[in-house]
Length: 288
Image (tube, rainbow, N blue to C red):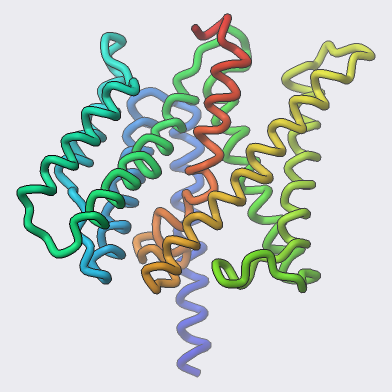
């Protein structure tokens, strides 16, 4: 009875988060601007606190102050054209973290430095790509909002298909030592579902006037499948690998019934920067 009650509470919490969270996210994508930017940076900050909490279990103390200063800088890059993220900035912040650690006199300085820089890049820089995609302005009907919605929908479709088909038909595990529930059937089903979705988008939204030229719609769908259906799932494994290292099942409990923010954003944390690079270089003559 107690177990059933706990399961029911978890399901109710999951439904409540979906009812509140999905409209909030969709409205943020629609309106964009500072509204969407603040929402993503809240996720960045919460994800960093979750990483810090996991680290403390192993007596690893990451440098929150330099990391949050870096996040403030990232936030400002979207508001002022005069500042941007460059290799020089990343070098500067890495030097800052290395220098700070010398004076902290902690037990595990190498781990502190490594995970501080990992968090800065994996959480901050990579999730910041989501905001960069939303701010893309091509001057066409298809712009940042559409690309952002495409990204979220593709990742959700991949995760849902992988879970449904993997749980029903999956037997052979991919990496049981990292993520024991992930199967080849689930992974392939997720990728195929993304391809079906993105090829429909490519034919009817990206290239509606393709005529008999099927090359660009199919190539676009294949690239998007690689990004959302393959790299996105690798992002899931990356987060599972980190959780396994720290001996936790969920990254946190902030999102009742869904685990933590890292658990919800894991696929996007590799898919978003990959998608941003694809858009940047495929649209470089338009967006600069």
